[in-house]
Length: 301
Image (tube, rainbow, N blue to C red):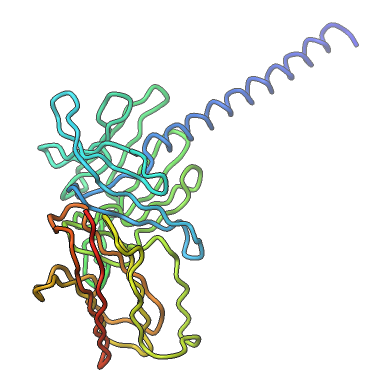
């Protein structure tokens, strides 16, 4: 092998090594960027909860909830916790200009804007590139039994992109990033004390042809509880279903469910994190067609 051949081989090997190093750097930036953004939430109020599921067939659900507030550099942020570990996940706040920001690496990173328009562009500048988010389209969709204006956002960076669906009412509805985060869909939430959809952490398979027995209302679990408990019930035939919570004087505390349900087994979660409800006995009532049942539960502060 002559000297020229040796030099060419060395250059070829070195070139491959450089390409591999660059590829590793790019992948590291992608993961870093994805972990930095992670999940973002809105609207912001203490006690708000969001439950997301990875795929329709997946048994994995993740819950995010705003547990407290904290002041950083003179601004008030909401503390977001993430199950299952209940560790602090992120700090969020809503700026006066209607832009939601997440506190990351000692700076505010914008991720959504109220009344997002086609003229709006949110940017985050990092050493490895600029992340831009724009409004791609608006659609009217049915969410939790109600019509909602959905903002279809598209975010792009040098080597990756993601698509997100947002509403001002419920926050992030779904996100798709094939490289970093995969896909997540909002299946339930608690906004300002009102429950929407399925907020349980248990995936329940609903099979219309495999529902035996009658309507039923199970005992809540855990019981006693603080700050939340799950109520399970079974619907025998398609019916208008309501599930409400009352105090010992018969006063309605909250409506957990009020919608038409197909036959199946369902879960609903009663949250008391941001409420001023005192310890004591409470009642929950299931009404499905002609079927009605009341159970009691104990809240311990």
